[in-house]
Image (cartoon, rainbow over all chains, first blue to last red; front, side):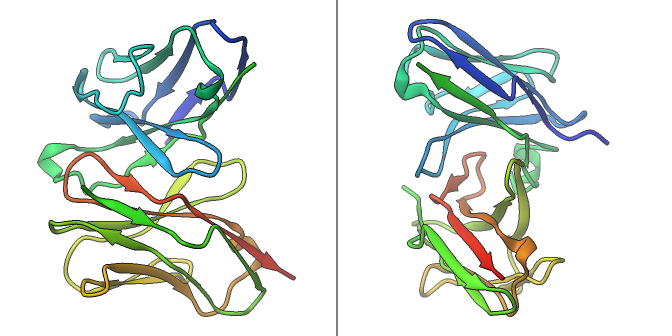
Amino acid sequence: GAGVSQSPSNKVTEKGKDVELRCDPISGHTALYWYRQSLGQGLEFLIYFQGNSAPDKSGLPSDRFSAERTGGSVSTLTIQRTQQEDSAVYLCASSLVGASGGYTDTQYFGPGTRLTVL
Amino acid sequence: AQSVTQLDSQVPVFEEAPVELRCNYSSSVSVYLFWYVQYPNQGLQLLLKYLSGSTLVESINGFEAEFNKSQTSFHLRKPSVHISDTAEYFCAVSSGTYKYIFGTGTRLKVLA
């Protein structure tokens, strides 16, 4: 079956513009995660969805960042008024179950979206 | 708070030589531990994980990791590496919640 897909694979934008990053999780996966991977740094947790709800948004770096998930499937990460420090690879992951599985189910990652803010 | 330390940012090793990628964690509660691998231009893939039971866990491609609670370590080892093992390896820890804490990664470069 298809894995996690993300689009676009690369996005170059100008400072101050808004961008939308899309994630299509594996069908049936209830849990969805967004991470940011900056050069020389580990993966930084941004937000977690269980179904369409986001119980924890504390990882979002500023109020310019927002995310939503619809139909328990596709998720969109939006960055408003982009800044150069937003340049990074944004990774999405999904897993089959969340709380009921103790969060030990494997997280399957997409290939990421490389965002460059000029 | 939990944290993960991967001290080696890059590890060069010759083909067929053994390798150890180090991972240390800090946590005040019980942990689950993971190693993920990221091949060039690909997403992260789970390599192996420790949840409970035997402290030695193995992957299908010859890697193994041992959970050492006293040393708070989960080092990844392979007795003989191949060119195809060239990738970036990430250690991660979870206390059983949705929030995984990842290390900064170790870039393994296998030399011919």
